[in-house]
Length: 314
Image 1 (cartoon, one colour):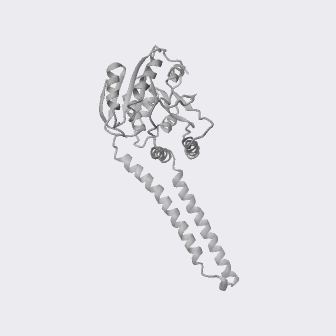
Image 2: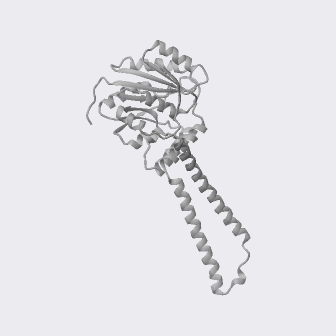
Image 3: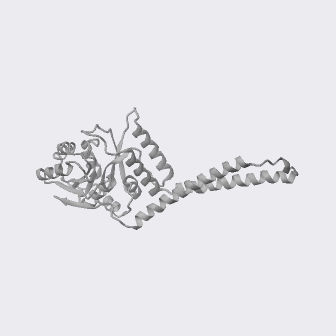
């Protein structure tokens, strides 16, 4: 790896959704870190269709700090879309994505920049979970086990959307125009030189997490159906298993005919119904998987934008 210049331009991308009581405190914490660094910083706050006073707060911050660029999305497009909007707008040599709730410690920014200057293209912050597992941590563990088992792209467990990327890596991600975006997988897929930076998640500055269970499920579905065809193979395997069971059943019945003992063959209504119900259930599962993939294809071929900007101002 060849070292990079020590005074690179750094962009910070911060998606924000209904964080009116938090984002100003987040900016103070960021300034305490970046004001001590000898780099040119640009801070992109991406308002993801907030319904509270977030946009007003961001515009006020922009008047106080000329390094701030406020991007307002036309509505709530989701966390991945907001990050994408920031990446598309960024121009710096090194781009850092960080959440606005304070759980991603700004103190790591200096270490990320140092690793970038050493020649790494991707500096991925990896959350170290505490011993007391919560429901969210347990489901996160199961998700990463699943996605790494069925996908050809390895995603580091605990790798949140807190990372730094070189300009070359950002441009590579921008060249991937898919509608359903799982940035953690997309960034792993490009295969650029990366390093893991572990950290302990801190408490939120205020408020509650906006990442509901439904949003986590949708993100998991985007990851699974965008990076793996295993669900279709499950249906194919189930069909093969039922074909083998049907063949065994046929051999079993024919054995009575060869022995001339057909009188012992009782009407198998319950067994027949059991097989029909199981087979029908598997067919519905397979058709469901196919339907999801077709739906994803339908949304991709429409070529709708991932997000729409209401305005972006310096």
